[in-house]
Structures are given as C-alpha cells and as structure tokens.
Length: 363
Image (cartoon, rainbow, N blue to C red; front, side):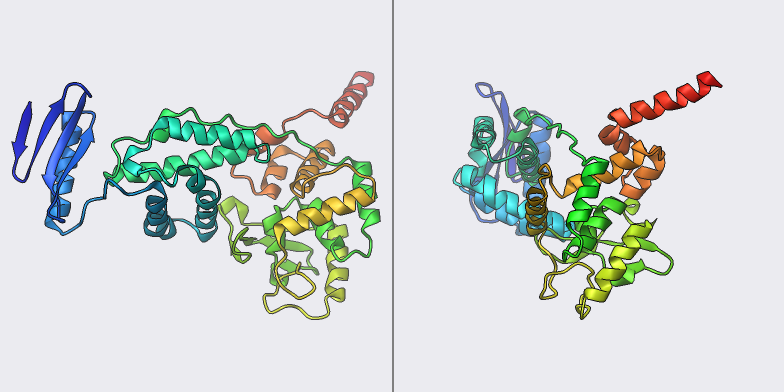
C-alpha cells in the first residue's frame, strides 16, 4: 500500500513491518526514511520535505558513527551543556565509543554492536561499572539526538540492557586514622588541603577551585562558588544551587589555612588557595596519587581523595550531627541523597544509641 503526497510517498513493507517515506532531498537525490508506524512515517516525510524546501541536505546513509558523534559534540553538546560536561562527553567518545563503534555506518548500527562494546569494556578489568554505565549513557544520549534528527530509525542503545549500577563500598577513615594522617602531614605543602577536606567535606573539585576571596579567616567561614573542571583545570560555577553554600570553618581548618597563607610567598594571579609550586591549578589525579603515597608512608589503608569527604560525613554523623546539617554541608541536592549514601550503621552509632538508652533506663 502506497500513499502519495506532494513531493514524496509513504508505503508499507510487510516483510519488515516498517513504513518507508520516500522523497527527493535538497541534494537532488531520492532518499528513504523508515518508521514503525504510518503516522510516524508521514511526520518524518513532512519534516524531510520541509528541510528540502529550505535547502537542508539529508543525512548521508554512509555517515559513520565517528563522524556523527563529532558533529553531535559540535552542533549540539557544546551549545547546550557546561564545558565540563561537554569535555567529559568528548573524552568518553574518544576513548571508548569511537574505537569500538566509530567505523560502522550510523544507519546500520545494531543493538548487538552496542552490547558487544559494553561487554568488552566490562571485560577489560581497568574500568569501573560506573564508567561503563556512563559510556552507555553518553551513547544513548547521542543516538537519541540522531533519532530526533531523522538520521536513524531507532535508538538502538535503548534496546540494550544498561550496565548494572555499582554500589561502591564506603571506606571512611576512623578517628584514630584521621589523627595519624594529620600528625603525619604536619609541615607538608598539602597539609592545609587535607585538613580542609576532612574538616569541611568539600568535593575535590570544590577544594581545588577555592580562591582566597572565598574565605574569611577572621570570621571563620568559607563560600563554595566554583569547582575545578577535570579537563579544563579552570574554575567553573557549581553544578546546582545547593552546591553553592557558605560553611563555618572548624578552628583547625582556620589555623591550617592561616599557616598555609603565610607559607604561600606570592598569591598566584588566579587567587587559588591550593596550587602547584609554580602557582598553577593542581591536577585531580596527582592530588589523589599524592594522598595515597602519604597513606602508604604512614602505614594507613589506601583510600581515594573522595574518601576524605566520606570520612567527614561519617564522623559528623557518628558525633551526633543531624542528617540535614550534614547534607547541607556536603551540598547535596536533597537529604534523601545523603541518607542513601550515608545511611549505614557504624559501631560508634550503635554504642552512642546504647549509651543514650542506658541513661534513659537508669533514669
């Protein structure tokens, strides 16, 4: 069955159970678009004819996944998301998606191609489940754009089961381990960074983007306004309104920052608090590796820099601080997020509850 309209036609392919919209594009060639319903094919035809009338050339059926992704990053991603997110997408495309799928024609990409890519990434052994899931998410977003542009009939990524979410084990330091760490880094160039991390719970990027103008050492407070871009290594606005926050500083943090300011011979033009010896922004990976070298030297268990944030939250909750206060200090979007991450039960919490019940029962 064929339904004709001015400039094109729509017909049904019984063997494939698809509707084909045929038209002549702005390039003077005949093209076909396939959809699962007649209505969708008619709609695709209307858009295609409109593009043809406006001189917009149709997407080539020989367009490779690599070429499409490059165009997607430039024409869509860079125009609508923060530079940090765009850089993250671009690196994911370059490192993982293009090597696996870049050679395939976009129009011929199949679910099994995506599934094989995910399986291969998971089997590498050097990528976390979170990273593999992020690769899947970036590809699904890109193919969603391709679908809206009429470059593909379907988003094949949605036909593949996403990789399972990882449940990273919380590994905060204990109070005794925190004391050992702080004792062991006295006089170290990064002493103030470690003290600030443990005393405020700021994210690594937030700490590395701090400027002296964000801190008032007389009043003893700090305002989080920026985060350091992982790829740009430049301060960027915080991602959410809750991330922008003002904290009261523990006296130990004030003292550490004051000593750090006195040791910092010249404040860099950027005004950053934590920098290299040359005054340039610190690299997140180098900061984490430096912490791990220090932990090894002190005979402490290996931890990520992010685990200092977990340590702040866990020790604050163990000390009896309320979940809402901890959530606000961490800059979480909601208390529910904090509860999901830090709702675990520790021996210190159990003992504190037992002590309180002792006091009640002995009343």
